[in-house]
Length: 179
Image 1 (cartoon, one colour):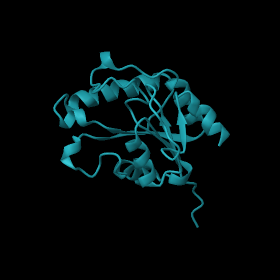
Image 2 (spheres, rainbow, N blue to C red):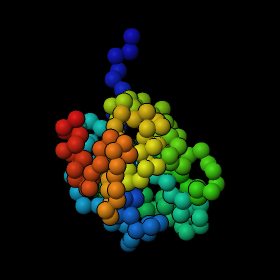
Image 3 (cartoon, rainbow, N blue to C red):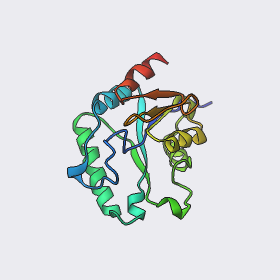
Image 4 (cartoon, rainbow, N blue to C red):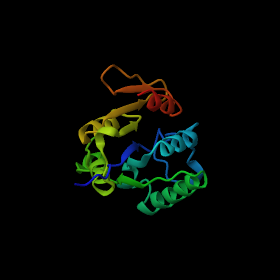
């Protein structure tokens, strides 16, 4: 009998959660971390959660920036987080434009299910954090236990949109402590 406990994870969207969403951010000089992200990610990591990024990057498919641009920015972002003692297990991304009708773009659960397979994640003990309903739907479609919608720029969040609605990533620490 295998007594290994499966991992728990927090799946995080990138734009609007980890960094301020400035529409198709692809250059280091345009990347700005959200306020409170470092303390929050460190807290989640210390609480035993794997940190996994799942992000739609349609700017690649639309030709606004290249896969190499995205990878360079991602490598820089991961290095910045590592300097703060934060480890992102992996960054899963969909490079396709919405009209391509691919099977990996959120709200598809494909990126989350691939992470589940690679890291042996217990989805019921895991969280999906995003700033769009497609993020929440991806989490639900993957069987994630709890979903959190970050309301950016006065965005509305109605009952049923997500399990929890918050105004800042900083609130996630209190939320996960309370549950």
